[in-house]
Amino acid sequence: LEIKEAGEGLGIELLGVEAAFDELVSEVPGPKIIHLKDPAHFLVMARASPEWVQLLDGGRVVVMPREKIEERYSGHALILDQEDDGGGPRLEFLEFHYSFGIAGVGQKVEHAFKVTNAGEPDLAITLQAKGCGAPPSDTSFG
Image 1 (cartoon, rainbow, N blue to C red):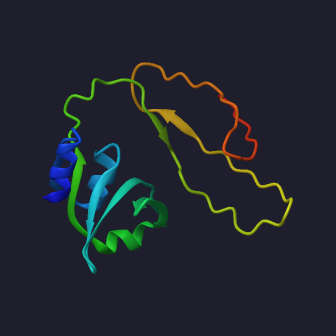
Image 2 (spheres, rainbow, N blue to C red):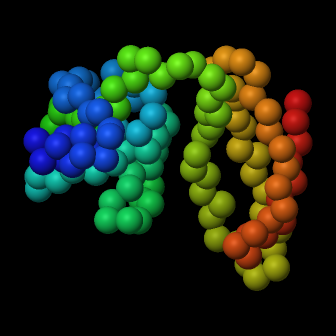
């Protein structure tokens, strides 16, 4: 209840739901605040794939095996009230985690993360100069 009230204080309307994990992942877009048991804890679930779950915990981004989170999920979550989201384009990553394994110094590793527009109208993507010391990347459209 305190989390819901804190969100409302920031102008964020949160709805409490009881749902199976699969239902929460497949039917509710966007991040969700999920309740875990053993020990009881709330985390923000940013996204999930069939194998992985990306969580925000204490300011850190954590990627964990989905089965570990499903085991602890209590069946309760807080979701954003999206009754009138106004539509618009929505970038959706089909995959968000890839294990590159162990790479040696100077070894080149590659992986293509595919994205799609899950909304309407068309999504415009523009290339930006790299920043934050990130390595160069190759972006292709097709």
